[in-house]
Length: 254
Ligand code: DGL
Image (cartoon, rainbow, N blue to C red):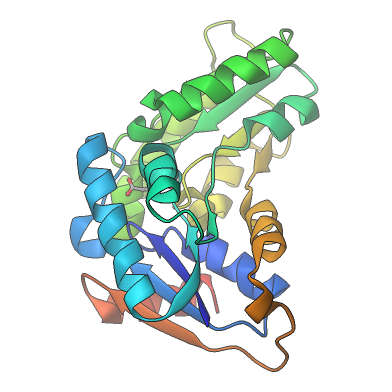
């Protein structure tokens, strides 16, 4: 039995790395839906259809657990997938605004995520809950249009331009008080963590929930996988170019 992971592309590698660090004995299949990326600026129906296709492809290969390594797919398809596969352990990811609201010192938390995630009812419900629990904390969501695609295609000039604009938005909120805590709410963004950190400066902490997702996956591990020992395998699948996925693994998740 294998753990299946999917994302619209290479973003989920930040999650794969955390999973393999925590559970090195497990076998993994990573599926990048690169021919259909990005998801973040598509409608819910598109993301749901693609997510269903990815889950089915992973199940066809014998996966006994699914990790949706994509905030957008979790937000727009997570609930439907759980209803459609009630006994399959499915782990999703959401922007970590709850821990960020507990960590901020100046009360300003930024959230970088795709348009699809930020507009989803799942995110809006989470936002309301965090606001109700911590009314003194201001949450500043921002969707850097095109940034996931730029990371996916390794377009350095676009990454530079779009990440600068995103960081400016995080540092110059309408109240004039910059965010001291920024949530990486799209799994592509941790891949350019160093770029974002250098633009935001050392006073800003970046929150990436990859380790928490891996912990949750370990908790949901089916019994058949719990006692595994040895060194796990990784198989790569892509609806796009497998060579670019392999290159991205070497760069980001070696
Ligand atoms: N990596 C994905 C996420 O976490 C989506 C990026 C995209 O395809 O737009 O939201």
